[in-house]
Amino acid sequence: MPAGVQRCEVTPMTLSPWHRRALLVLLSVCTYTSLLVQGCGPGRGYGVRPTPRRLAPLKYKQYVPQISENNLGASGRAEGKITRDSERFNELMCNYNIHIDFKDEEHTQADRFMTKRCKDCLDRLAIAVMLQWPRTRLRVTEAWDEDGNHPPDSLHYEGRAVDITTSDRNTSKYGMLALLAVEAGFDWVHYESKHHVHCSVKADHSVALERGGCFPGLGQVTLESGEKIPMFLLKPGDKVLSQTQSGQTVFSRFLLFIHKDCGSRSVFLVLGTEDGHRLAITPNHLLFRSSHFEADHSKYQAYFANRVQKGDYVLVHGSGRGVRPSKVTSVTLEERTGVYAPLTEEGTLFVDGVLASSYASVEDHGLAHWAFGLLRFLHSLSQWTQRVEVAKANQTEAHICNDTKQKCQMWGDTTIRAKGVGWDHNNYCQQNTALLVDSYWKTCNIDRHKQGNVHWYARLLHTIGRLLLDSEIFY
Ligand SMILES: *[C@@H]1O[C@H](CO)[C@@H](O)[C@H](O)[C@H]1NC(C)=O
Ligand SMILES: *[C@@H]1O[C@H](CO)[C@@H](O)[C@H](O)[C@H]1NC(C)=O
Ligand SMILES: *[C@@H]1O[C@H](CO)[C@@H](O)[C@H](O)[C@H]1NC(C)=O
Image 1 (tube, rainbow, N blue to C red):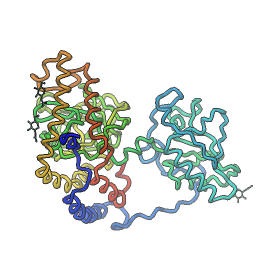
Image 2: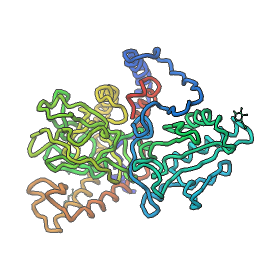
Image 3: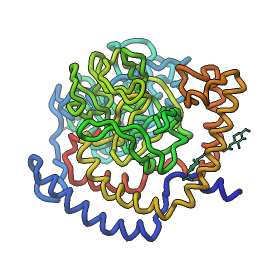
Image 4: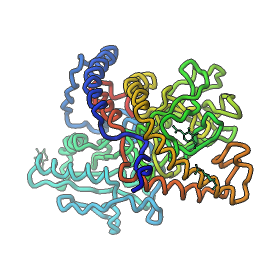
């Protein structure tokens, strides 16, 4: 492999001696300061891991957690029916667990179809039931529903919900059965009817992304030169359009990818604004929004993207350096390739022309930015030592970039260089999406052997945070 190719990995995923030393400092610093943060929050002692409450068997009509099923903290919202014809049908698994009775009243095996998370929880529950009541088994009366027997937004249509009983159908066991289901990991359990317990889970992709929230690989960032490039071509040291805490528009140095996985496909929220911007972003990523028109840019607060609704305002970047509020006019779900979470020095950046945060999963931009402070600092230092490597990476990526640009030009668009914009779908190279995708996969294959990673620092923070912070704050 040519030397230049190997340098193409933008993120140092392994620990250099420098990082290892830093990690020690970090552990103590983070632990200490997380305690402080926790100390300001409600309840719970300093640094004591909350002992899980031992719940009592559920009462009739009780549900756990005590929020509605489609809430983020429970199973999350419905994402659309899955039929045997739909592409998503392949995501469902067939549960052949011999310790579970499937009622299968439809005689289609539909009750065996479920998402992976649902299957995992059910398998765990089957064991718990046998341990609790010897000679009794878990019984599934309803899982995936393809016949439309449930309300329109039911999770049964996606294989994310099951109705269960015990094999002896002794209703006095169902309160306990519901408790066992909570302990088996179902995200929402409801002692719904005298005749069954309803359990549901989060969507698999939302669980997969719990720790990283991202943009797709072809999400565009704006460079200092005014050029818009797809995110996958970002390299350390590039300066991208972002905003300071006080609301000033600046070009901020791109440091590394907190999360980078070029090969995966995921469902993104796509927010459309009244002036034609379209931002694709994972639901757990932070985005700056205001519920009403607000001229002062510093008044826009970071929220999980899936809290953004039609009619909210986000900040968009127009021509030149002009940033202005724009109303969200549509929110849809679309599948895209690659997940990238770029960290900038300012902790913010404009993606597809819309202001977003570098952070995800924890709904507190300020806290996240502060917690990443040490990494940002270390990285600024290490960029000095890595200059040579960067220059080599630069060569390879410049080549790919050049390659695609030329192909764009071959397609007849000779204005690209003159205007300094190579990637703007709206203006140029519209027919060239295929070529762009081509170069995307070229880059992806180059660093495939090192992909699929959430940065170690982010993982560490997440673990510490989970132990010490209020769970409300997490996605
Ligand atoms: C039903 O379950 C309860 C609790 O496990 C048990 O006490 C009772 O004897 C069972 N009833 C029958 C008819 O099996
Ligand atoms: C990267 O390449 C560009 C030209 O393609 C050059 O202007 C720039 O200085 C290079 N950056 C580094 C760090 O070598
Ligand atoms: C880009 O392509 C042009 C035309 O083939 C070539 O002259 C130039 O050296 C290339 N630049 C890079 C950085 O590969």
